[in-house]
Length: 159
Ligand SMILES: [Ca+2]
Ligand SMILES: [Ca+2]
Image 1 (cartoon, helix red, strand yellow):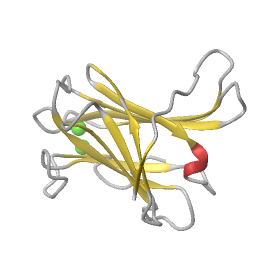
Image 2 (cartoon, rainbow, N blue to C red):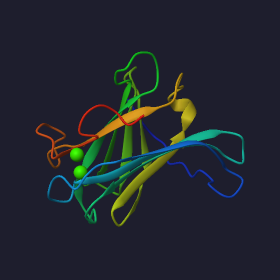
Image 3 (cartoon, rainbow, N blue to C red):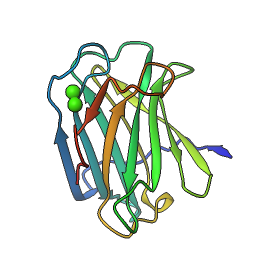
């Protein structure tokens, strides 16, 4: 089941960054989906709630319509994927879709500016038990199938 939730999270001066990780990826493919960098920021907002912002930057502008990025996130237990989040701008406005291990899901509006797309949601949706790590891939446009156009990082995870 996918629930719709469009959140607006304040990110003003009162917000406190708990941690931020930026992982870089080389200019190692051609086309719109060549990942340049990925960033995860966990912060406490002015209302005391924690949120996470996930951003992906490409080497080229993403443009008005493109196939998407597919991220695996590891935030509980052993070193494997706990949830999946996809970023897309091909049917409707830019959005992120979070798919949780229990089969539930959430869709968030995403902010796409130039080469970057990002979305922010409440950390409690994940209930992490450790620092969140992830890896991102650019799947074949529009299908999310293999082969990947790009992987970031090329091996392993950004931690
Ligand atoms: Ca790349
Ligand atoms: Ca790569």
